[in-house]
Image 1 (tube, rainbow, N blue to C red):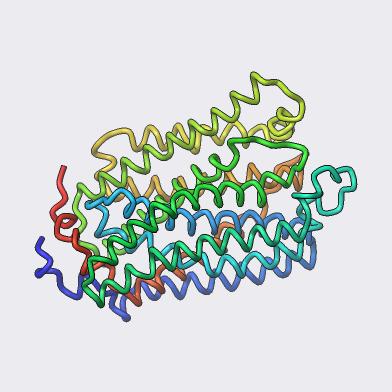
Image 2 (cartoon, one colour):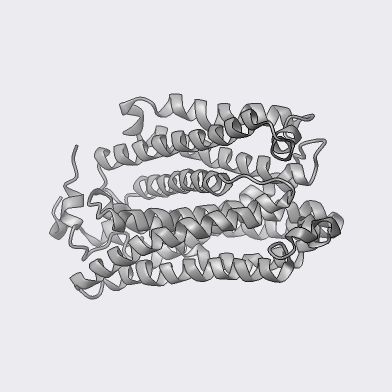
Length: 392
């Protein structure tokens, strides 16, 4: 397809389209689940706060994955992904809202984190204290917002001004941004999740959270693409674009499994009590079933489903695999977080389900809102024509 043949129907979402009705449904779900969070907090503050942390971690993983894939696109000067870049960019708009979502965490530090009130951890107090935790979190968001303003915002500006220097600047900041992103997401994962058990540590934990996040973010992007194509948009995407998305989803999920197994293997053969306590907690009671299910659900099933070439080129199979991986990512975060709340038994009730719905509905509302305000395709990107003609 030639750029001149792209009509407004390909580029802009119709305000009367059913997609906006889905956004309204998502808004209703978000309000209902938010109300349930509030009611649950009044009944059981600790349970509600741990589930809020779970939902927050899931929300931020999708937002940060959008930022990561945008940076990778520019840093590698990829051509094939120009037509889908707006999808990853739209996820980054969740980041400013994420900063607001940290407020309940700051207010509940003494409930979530034992280091906030444990006098036996004085030797770690220089790093693990309330003020420094809050400052570090604000610093992480400052870096992410800096990258957002240097890489994402200029992309939309380029739709109005045909300026090649914008592309060059986005490439430069993406290269810098990937380094900053790697450090900040790792330390954010350590602060938000690993310090829930301040006596345990893993040097690979930040990479583990990163790996799960980029898989879930890519799965969410594929679902948005599938939804848009179903409603007549992004018809410029061909099977080759889908194949590349499928290969990325397959490969990154294998990467997640590699990191997960590496962490387990290092702790297993090291056999140090301070490290093995992490897995011991997760082999007690019903947590054992969750530990056994995770490698099956997050790795083996998607591996078998996405292994063939035809599956990667089939948008229905890709969509089903993406829904499954989004669920497995939430289960993974649940497995990381909730044993610190309930070591004896894996809690599974309405609040846990509502947390997942709350997170996905919030992200969906923001993403669709942004996609509805801007062109779905970066119209003046110098490599757009190459992307439209993508083949393998």
